[in-house]
Length: 243
Ligand SMILES: Cc1cc2nc3c(=O)[nH]c(=O)nc-3n(C[C@H](O)[C@H](O)[C@H](O)COP(=O)(O)O)c2cc1C
Image (tube, rainbow, N blue to C red; front, side):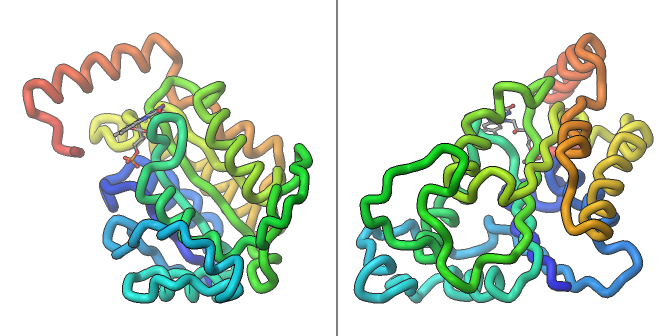
């Protein structure tokens, strides 16, 4: 089983989202037999889409831009059984790097021929060769809860992939995940992400019930607010080591 992890946080290994992703992968790869490749998108050369739509016309699924890392990334996506895309929530959507990467995957979608969008289905359809893969999206956000703040991202992913065609693993209160003093508490909190990874390994999916349970925050609102106050105080004093 080949697992391709595409990390869209510029904070790379220090990233809150990578912390959740590592917990999820621990369950998914338990028992061995999985080959995991981690790529930080911020390390890649990704030229923005030229907007020529050649990949939908004359080049039939091929992008005309060949001199960056997209051809290799596309090869890796095609070879993977499970694609884990992980990124922080930026302005209620995916970070720019991930959006530029997503734009360049246009060649994987079917050509738009005037079909009328139907709610609850992917608006385009995926070209042959990409179907059958599992697609997991792991994201952390700064807000206290995932309600409302993830609506724009989930709406976008539903339209692109189709609801149910990807597994949204969402985690609120991201700023608490890498605070050294909270390590033990957060390790306990993250075991449910490891369980979810194990569930994917054992059943081939993660149930709606599990996905919803992952969205419960690590701390109650009052505690979270106090932690945030301390975080910003430390930030001003320059004493934080996790930046
Ligand atoms: C440019 C920027 C925009 C952000 N926008 C949001 C947002 O819209 N909603 C939110 O809850 N958090 C937002 N955040 C907070 C991050 O999503 C949060 O801190 C996340 O856990 C960072 O993950 P990382 O350490 O993996 O990069 C934003 C952070 C940055 C730097």
